[in-house]
Amino acid sequence: MTTIPRALDTAEVHSLQTRTVTTLMGSQVLGGIGVASGIAVAALVAADVSGRDDLSGLANTSQVLGGALLTIPIAALMAARGRRVGLATAYLIGTVGAALAITATILGSFVLLLLGTALFGASTTANSQARYAAVDLAEPRLRGRQLSLVVWATTIGSVVGPNLFGPGKAVALRLGLPELAGAWLFSAGGFVLAAIVVQLMLRPDPLLTARALADHGTPVGDRVPERGSILHGLRTIAASPVILLGTLAVTGGHVVMVAIMVMTPIHMEHGHAEVEVIGFVISVHILGMFGLSPVAGYLTDRFGSRPVILLGVVIQVAAAVLAALSEVGWSLGLLLGLFLLGLGWSCTMVAGSGLIAAGAAVRDRAAVQGASDLVMGLSAALAGGLAGVVVQHLGYDWLGAIGAVLALTLGAYTLLRGRQAVLTGP
Image (cartoon, rainbow, N blue to C red; front, side, top):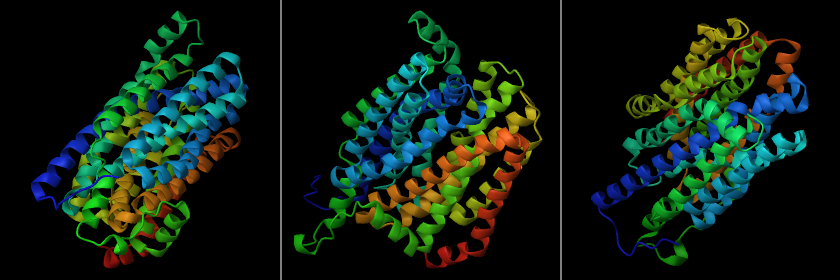
């Protein structure tokens, strides 16, 4: 447990916060390389191993589902031992998943591939939870910008990751592995390095420090115990209009993004697009997700979360329409649609996460944030699985149309019920 023997002044807290954000930005770059490298090839490997396009979305779905379910023990670990231990553990589990995915590619085992991608999902849990670690010590007026800086740092690794197809193929061939397995080699390396950075440099632990500061001067018997139960987190979300709106925002934006994104490589492959071109489109999509997140953070701090959520909805509707109208294979319309899909996600994610961070008490943070990510992950996993079925039986254009309807639903809720969250929020 982190012990703060005295109250810290503003300058000292600011210094701790700066070091925390800097460290998390470094780990996000490395983790982003790992996550993006693996996600970019998962659908292609799944289609190749299973021999069925309608099962291709299950690899990314397994990754999203695994990340969601692994949020439960990771959140409990953070509640008990802090952000550092939880983040490092999640990255190491992701490394094991990458190794199993490589093995599955070699053996042609679809079941082993799904197991590997499920464990791989722990790395997305780490990247996701890092955004909350960034605001454990942040001033409320700067919360959106601090959170968005850590989200933005993922840009570097995530844009680089899908463009490692070429080097990955070269490394895989040199090692006698299937070509697409090379991407997961980069994933494993990125996760190991991210775990090392977090373990060595995320000191003092931001969550434990925030708790110690909150407890300063309070008799031990009067202190509220840590609450790390996901069930407690779900109850807290349901009881708070602020946290509920934040959870629905991150969930809705993530569902639309995942459903369309996971099937884009298949849509392009059907039009005989080269794997390098597919990697480029995905990297542009990821640039949209993370590259302008500081702008979303600034807008959230300046105008509030609700307008930024609505902005994200409008952008995602436009993205879904562009995707629905795109030709099979490669097109500028698809490229723009995927960029906007990521940008809309960024707005809903940053603004929604800001509401969740603002609404949760210090002792409830790990439970509430873990529960919110669990809801987001499970919903996106379902969406990713159904996306393959939709494309197989109805087509990619229908998937885009359904995505637009889902985004509009989030917008309607934000307009009709979001006002209550604004009026009752902190």
